[in-house]
Amino acid sequence: MKFFALTAILALALYPAPAAQDKAGSADEIQVRQLERAWNQAEMKQEVGAVDNLVADSLVYTDYDGTFMNKKEYLKWIVDPIRRPTIFTTRA
Image (cartoon, rainbow, N blue to C red; front, side, top):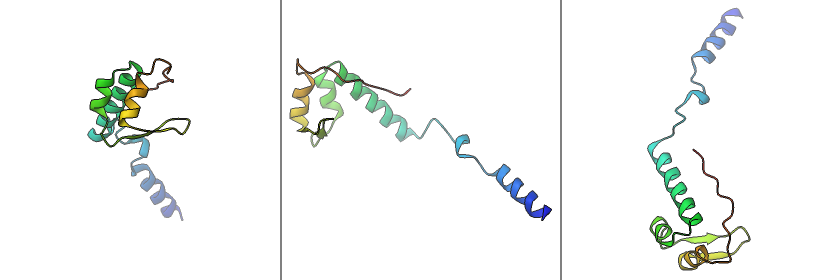
């Protein structure tokens, strides 16, 4: 019984913990986060050209209230003078 307990403890001690894995993420994950941050900043600053370059022509956007927009409608919505930017959060 002691042998089994010792083996189990040793196996758990040598098993790599999920928290010990690479927290920086893969290159793809980093790139996606950078693109998302650029999109958020461009939308917040109402930079239509930058958003146009960041999103696909096939974009279908759903707003928080359930409004559907295609890319053309979304780009108009970004510069709408009545619209106030919502809270943007970006992770470091």
